[in-house]
Image (cartoon, rainbow, N blue to C red):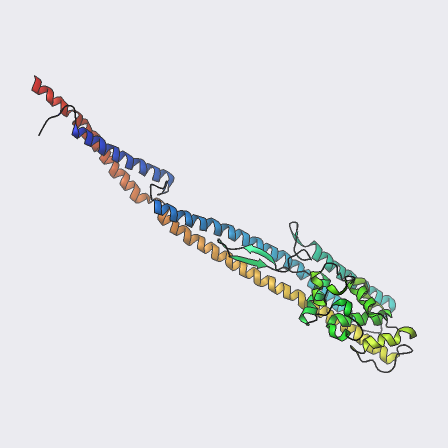
Length: 388
């Protein structure tokens, strides 16, 4: 074996091995101190890309769950308000039942009508005031297609919360929609009043209670309809220019049917298509006709209140289904976060058992390399013995 002084190959080899083992130890220190197996792309380029995609999914799922919980909150607020609206309408229906007796005095009827009117106005107030923060969720400001909720981590993964419009005009519009009433309000007259379902009967009942011979005058009084042909009966909830007049509706409960000689035939013409009145009315209503009209007014109010309860219940049922759907989505997102996090951990997290074993091995090698390097550096010294 040749003996060189200028080039100590053994020392260079020792230095290389010591440098390599030190680099491996530094990598182990980084992995153990950070808890992550991948601290830069050089550690595992493909693994870094995969783990980052999984991180994107995890953060998206966590935020989606928070979004879904916000949607549940909106639905709960709306559903709670609708529950109180239902209670009020049930009480209004009870008052209509009570007012069906002809035994009540005018003062009694006024008291019933006052409470009836107030409850209807309170319902409109509840619809106007119910909000999620400053966002109105039960009046005309609520989108008809519902509030979109981003309940998933990726594009196209949305749900909706449909709170709807609970104002009385909107509820009567939904009643008309269920009854397939599409006629415009300004076209309602004595020849087609029967084609407007519950809305038409309410107009007829108002005419009887207020000795009103003009059908459109009754429409304007009840629905404040001044927008002309553009609004159909089933679209009342979508046009804020139409509002329902509770004071006018309450007159059906408070007023006793009367018919002046001038209006009798005109009112009878409108009534003919919704109720058959016994005998002629040219000189006013007789006792038999009064009983028939009382029954008609009572039935109209009862049916109208029942229809309103049905519409509110439909909104509540839809909100309940949407809450259940979003709750299920939160559970699914939470499960997905657990499983995706587990997948990411297998790629990204440090295996402390394996890494500490590797560190111990490298420490032993480093110590050995240091000792050998020290000995290798002494090799050129043997050349001096040849010079002595």
